Image 1 (cartoon, rainbow, N blue to C red):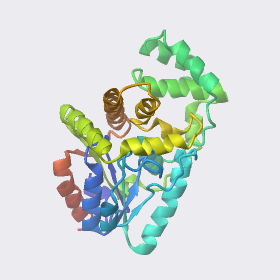
Image 2 (cartoon, rainbow, N blue to C red; image 1 turned 180 degrees about the horizontal axis):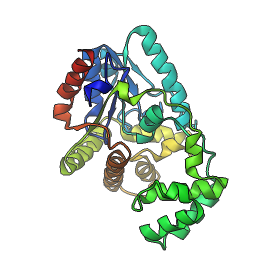
Image 3 (cartoon, rainbow, N blue to C red; image 1 turned 135 degrees about the vertical axis):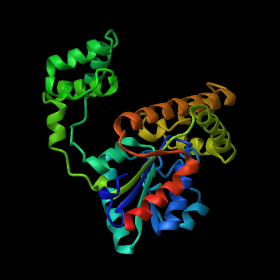
Length: 314
């Protein structure tokens, strides 16, 4: 990051990375060195019911430095990016009163984008509209899908890469459901909570094969630490099947195992595979949506961030 864009003490530190990349350990170490508070930016770690399976920091880790935005949402609550921003705003204000540097860490790219770019208050997309768009898109390649968007919403299409299929689909859904181009909603977005130019930012980059091994090993560790019992307790609550927490990586397969529908070994393998696929989607998001964020390996990230902080204060 250019020194001219980061004069003085950083207003916050933002650490993103795929699951199992070591970002929580990095945030903890950095918060200790900078006098900070670790604030969660992961959409599953906000829920209180699944501590182990969502890899929330341990009790010992949370005792080392202040932590916030972890496990404060009940599983029966539908939580949104907008609600997280409200909670983040309060956490930033509290950190300021306590003289602590906010260190946001997580793998939910939408949280970081909303934090630094603002949030467009787009109405929820009806499931019928979403399903219809997906069905129509199934027969189209990327170029044809982008052309379909251009025919309905040329302004948004002009801003999207023809191969960015997910964003093209999202733009089609918004236009179909609201009758208004996505870029118009984005123009009315709430202002960002943080100016990215005054923050230290980092995306952790891990070799793909190594990350796969770490994901598989961590899932095995979660099982040894009681993940299955967590899922058993959650299933006993009888929540509506559309609740977000029930989609936590590994939870659907373990739930089916508890119902006698699959073996434990198969459930573990499915949970590992689901988590690996999620990590790949995270990496894609970071690469396309956060391309201006500096990247570093977990081994090099701490020293690089400390150097960036020192240069900012120098």
